[in-house]
Image (cartoon, rainbow, N blue to C red; front, side, top):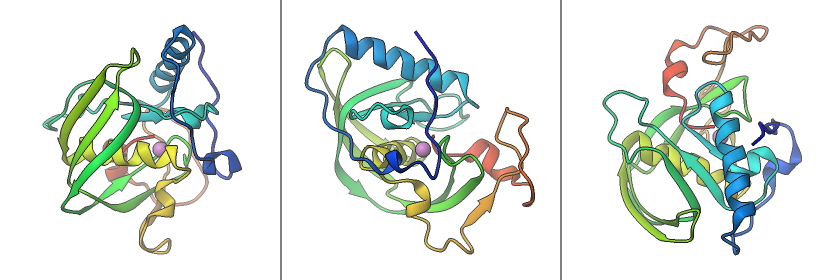
Length: 188
Ligand code: NI
């Protein structure tokens, strides 16, 4: 296994649309293992999408179980995920491993119905709500070349500069401390 480099803004490859997985083989499992290792090596991201490590396949990992009091389905590896149904909407703060210097307020559906496959090709279906639904919507955007900053209503009022990315101790110049974002960054 290996930790992969995370593509960061303004890398144009983040705009690439990823292709569906067709072969459920050992190579897929190895690539997923790298993706998970990379997620865990970072600042405790609740999610990661394959294109963030330069692998343009429709694969995401989401795990919001570390957030207290949030309904969730645990650690999920989602291959070829599709949102079948959206309901409601809510504004929430998101962050992203590919946009390390900012968080932003993004409107997302509050409830979704999702289908996907396991890494072995078995079908999955979930009803999700709240933070988990938000994290999944954030990660699926990556598969279509979208970042959360493409969805903020106003870049002037809804983008916030991070002082420190959670757990990394890395500082960036300027900006105000953004305490709320540290535990509330919806994905990666
Ligand atoms: Ni992200």
